[in-house]
Structure formats: structure tokens, C-alpha cells
Image 1 (spheres, rainbow, N blue to C red):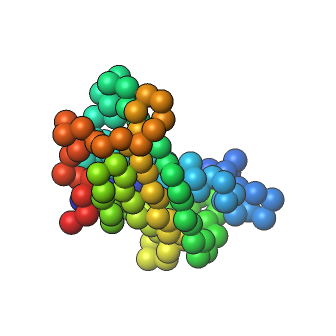
Image 2: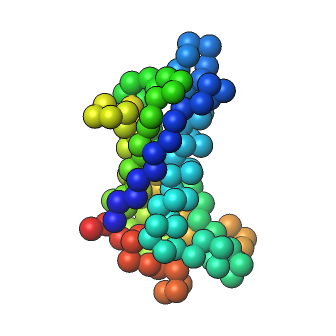
Length: 131
């Protein structure tokens, strides 16, 4: 499953060069992952209430081109790897047909103490698996 999020770059997200600040990309990617989880039917709030969470373990970002104020960007998110306790989501940020950045985000399912645990069946939804 692929999820898409489209939005417009705001002035306060840009640095003194007029480009989106590198740290802001992490916020973009996080919001797009939240939408992805919602789109696949993952019960994030239910997992949290049951004492679980999903933690980001690693993010690899390749910046290709700068994004600028008022650019319309689209982020696609899709799973590329899935294990018993973790997985990887590939996220690509586009402006039209131009790739702005791409990232591989490795996540882990954790218990209330922050230790990785197997995903219980009720939270191991099909959308977490690569197609």
C-alpha cells in the first residue's frame, strides 16, 4: 500500500537561503508516516493505550533538490521491509516530477519500557507488509 500526503511549504519552514531547513524534512516525514498508518488502518491510539508504541530507530535521507516557500510537495510512503518487531518505510518527497528527497525510515514496535517486542496480531495489519 502506498499513502500520499500533499501540502504547501510555509515561509517559517525555510532557512536564510530560502530553502526548507533540513530538520523540517523530519517533521514532514513524520506527519506523512502518521497519515500512512492511519490510511492502512493501524490503530495507533489503541496500541498506545495497550502499552505499545512505534519508535523510529533509523532515518536515512538523501537530499536531491531544495524545496522553497509555496512549493507544493507530495510525500509517498510505502513499506519496503517487515520483520516480527520492526520494518522500513520508504518515503519520497516530490515537487511535480522532481524528487526533492527520499528517505528510508526504520521503525520498531516497543513495549511500555521501550524494548522491542513482537507486534501483537491485532496491530500487525496487512498494510505494514511490502507488496
